[in-house]
Length: 420
Image 1 (cartoon, one colour):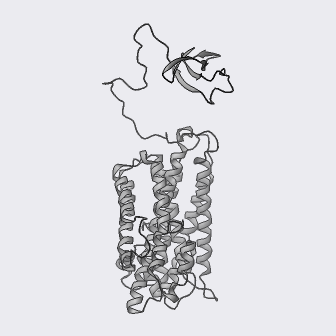
Image 2 (cartoon, rainbow, N blue to C red):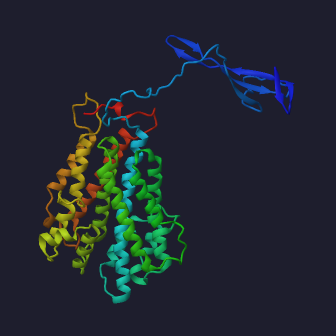
Image 3 (cartoon, rainbow, N blue to C red):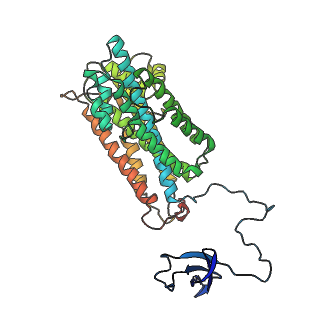
């Protein structure tokens, strides 16, 4: 066939790749084709169609105007009202689930870091923060490289570069910068499910906590305002999600991730600071209430009489405290109860059994009993309970992921699993 090449008509070989579509028990040849053109003198074969040749669409001329074909409704068509259904792809649900987890992970890290650096600054000026080694140990328990350096802070003090490593080190997934990066990645994947106000808050987090801070530019005194702003921004994001997201499966999986991660963060904090006996327990209790943003609630109930039993009750068992583990477990049980299920499933799902076990073990606990030490000066009952809760929460997270968020097979919608 004649081919226009290098400003002139030349003979060329043309091959047409046609397409057929299944139509009932037969096939229908689609109009048009994809043309592969070769001017090298070699014929176009099925094996060489995509190698070394130009390609163009082949158009089919019509004898008259062609009626438009569209899946969109014509202008002026009345749209029927709809409610949020279960038309949520599993990949979207997975990323919303992890977005919730990253938000809570970042807030927990920020609150603990703020308490650590508040005491580091006050210790350098007044010389008195006996609870600091326990807070540092809680930080070192959860983080990798920053934790290794932080483990000696109580002995050697802190440098500006070390503070920046804990906050801005981009090479460490455990640094606050690493957590916020993971948060941003998850949010970007589900950007069409996030409101404009939520995106403004995420952009503000990036502006206020920019990874471009080089070592030596930010001083230790700058750390606390940065952490305060990060905590405010994360709280604003959670508030917008709580108030503005429709109560469909997307919000369910986002909040499931938040509740699981907040529970695990509180468990790690209690195990890192409160299991072993301490000569400065009053200071430790005050720090725990500060990190959990529950100081005001405790003062309103018990004035300034700090005791281990009531603090444990407030942070561990009390289901009216939004920061307690009990509150998170009650919310998890409600979410799991309303997850999509096959209508033929009359028995309790493994996830429902786990939430029942979690809530029951915590509701049967008593704060003063958990606060008691054994002969070795260890709160062994509390440690056993916390380890059990952590294992069951991780099993719950894994079960939810395997049932609803696995993409190894064909991508499915939540509507494929009917609501219970």
